[in-house]
Image (cartoon, rainbow, N blue to C red; front, side):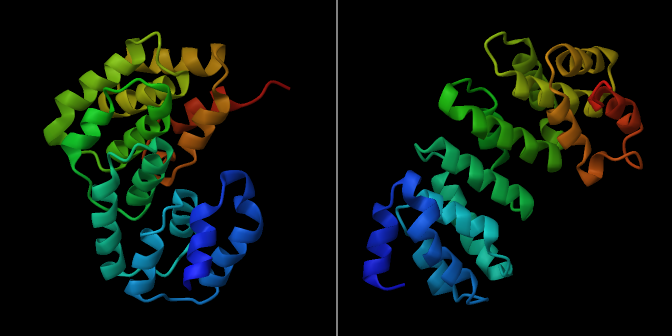
Length: 217
């Protein structure tokens, strides 16, 4: 990208992103495999929305590229733009990158409005890369999320589901059922159950929970 394009991208406001600036992203994506220096150039942009869109849409990452991006993610886990951080964690989850588990565990403690997306992304990461060395901490922190009346219910639904899958304890199942049925989180549970590792072959309660997601006729 030349200097003028970089300046345009960096100065672009969110409301204007899906117009002229997206053209530059489309042009990048049509180039196919990019050199590492080009990927670095993108990661050094100031426009986080552009970076995240690139990470989502680009499909030619190789092992060396991912190692580069993993370092970038580690350097940005404490970025003040928490939505950006949540997107980076989701990228790490999708590409099976390793994040510091103790930092991820710490993210489960924070209940602030601008941290909610990070919380949800972190629970997904921890569940997909479950490390039983941390099982006591994981269970205890997820229980706190469930019991916190000020916590967002989407986090409580996911925490209840993870705890039930890990422990198979009836209390977590009942809590999940209550949130889904009485608080109407059917769509969220349906999305969780649609993950490959949660289907009936690997999770005997999949079909049972799917019934809860069905809309009344």
